[in-house]
Length: 422
Image (tube, rainbow, N blue to C red; front, side, top):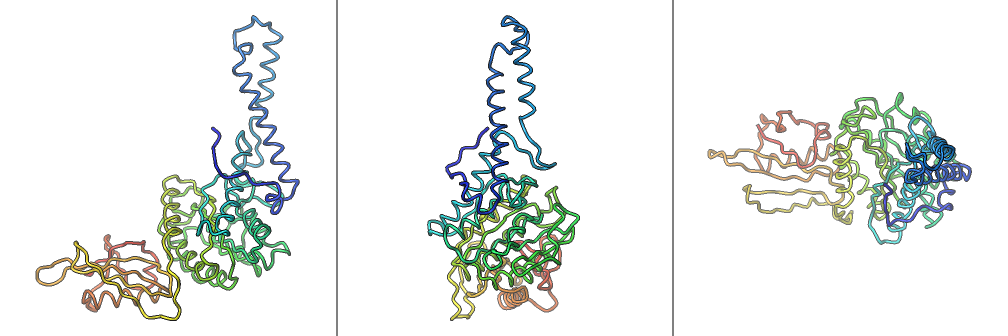
């Protein structure tokens, strides 16, 4: 069934800013042919003269309608490649997907929205300037980037792509000479052999940063690479607008690759990007959905991503670097202490729990950890020692008994995890 949307379709001018006119015209031409074929098939299906067994109109006409139907069925779809098929509503979906991304840029750049997430299909980052491929017809994020540059005069646009597959189409556009100082493309993806078998780090340039991940990459390894390779590159470029190719197929349950991320990792990476954007481009972010093929994992990951985008980001105060400690009372605990550092992005919410005194009464401390992994570990140790009197012989454990005893171990935890002293 056709999808009804209030967002406008992308214009030819917007599409041509990223794609060649030949590619755009070819996609629209074949979409039109398939739409006309399907419309005529609908008419034949309701024509009583084409009903099997109804020969009252004459056998020649009946056979002519049957032959015409068989011919039209050959144009009910068109396979561009093994993954990419044009069907009846492809034109509508593809044009509105790219159009929604452009509309989101308009909303963010004019201040109507702080940031935006476009839940669109089909995805776009595999679409090359000159061809469709990999489920993608038009490069939604690329079209949005060009719209920001051409339509809003944005000087520097950064695209961070954490889809598990390399965004070859976006990469190609970033390498064009006129984009050298205008467009930064950063991709974290599973290294080949993995579709589309591109994105080799050895081919990185001044404005293209491909971060390859091995198969079975863990949360901690992903986060480490993101902190050490992605964040410095993004901060150095200092974009005026941050775009996100938000693919969630790096989730461990997704069947299309082999990386072991969880929904919490997408919350974490989005939070990092939100804080960087707040520092370099007034928080302006447009995120566009890419991959994600396990429905439950996709739903959980997208929810985590949106939650991070919509959380309130405080104005960074670099003049006051003192730790801020806010105490609140809880009906469930003796006391709860929330610790945060004003000039670092919050990365992890942890609750420490311990049985205190002879009565073994439960006491808990909620800690909002910020800054680098080492800084987070220091904050956690200080909170455990000062608030719960943790001894050197005691350890912190998860509900399942896993020991947490280093900064690296924090990278494997999810938000709102409870750690027990033992």
